[in-house]
Image (tube, rainbow, N blue to C red; front, side, top):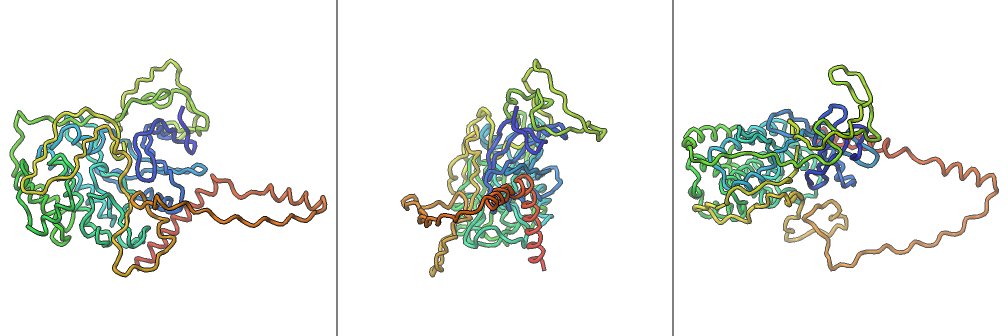
Length: 464
């Protein structure tokens, strides 16, 4: 049996790993279904505040995968999402290589639709990339895309959690203005959508730096090989280096995409049929399609569906077979997990664009370790005095000097021996030592609530 979290969520098996935590397939004993549970691993105040921001995001849209609930247990916290089992765009391109333009139009339309709903809440995603765009396992039917991972998203005007000379995001999917330290805004998300579109059309990760340089020196290039001109005009507008030259909104880009899609030729009978497979592996031993096969210790009472009454869950028969049929509402193999056989070569048609960068050809999901992080901008000509605390809030792109010896604090002076106390006073001292603070399972939710109030208050002050 898996670990039970907060008396409700029973962790089954890990299905992915992000920048600040691991994603598990978990059984929700209250709603009696499998969910994706993101468990926070880093417990410092900076990561905790990001966690509070992400779990507080509530966007109800068919193409957005936002947190649904959260829980705290002792020194651990998690939030849950719907389980989406078709993998990410990285899996899809790893299976098929460059995708047909008509299929790309369908995916981009859904991505822009979800992004429009995110922007309507004044939220900038800041980390749109193929690994954060998940797919439901729809087989050969119409694909259904979900925009996920709001770990570094922020509302417009909200105070930033990083230093002013740090850029947060994934290298290779950052807009030029982000690299110059501009405040997060919607056009940066649209630039990332353009890079995702080029990735789908060419089957390889685009070289964003070379692409921007080409646009600046030679203007908009011609369409790459195999990309229809109407679709390329939409993608090229998304990729303009100047934010003012891009679409102003995701809805505007979606309208232009719909007009371009009408000019594309109809798919022929010889075109390859795209199938989106279920990338989630089989359930681990002890779990079946209807949940755990035996009741684990620490599970709270469950509700009877449709009645609201509480009951103790019945233990399943030990002879129940452990071959799971994948759940119908299948989550989130974060940032590229699972497996899938490569079903086609990945030739890259570059046309008049600069050469693409390294290909994302890892269908096994070894790229599941998130490459989202923070890294420093180039220092100014006259740098300020160094701050010894400057490196305390950085992430995976700011590392300590490996040649520097570790700092060891000076030894503390020996404390003088305590004077002898009468027996009665020693007994009182022993009684006082038995009075610890509140338990961790009480203190942590209070801390989370205080941090949430602090963030909301900070946001309210900045809105004035």
